[in-house]
Length: 103
Image: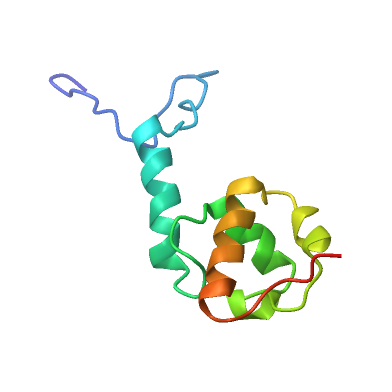
């Protein structure tokens, strides 16, 4: 076809072309993502990072109050729970007059 100009759409790729690289979040995005976890999880203390929230939820805890009487060692073993998360959880429980078991 004379005068025809081919257009390239999003679905057109060159043979053997690699898909675009996976997006890696910037430090600001990672920081905001962690802070936004509190807005996504109002049943847990503000400042708790998403990894800790995922760990708690996958272990069956959907509210901080559910941790009352649970042995601390069981929570610390969860992947994503570190010193900061434990401090936040202890403080949130203490505000409610509750606590994890320390044995």
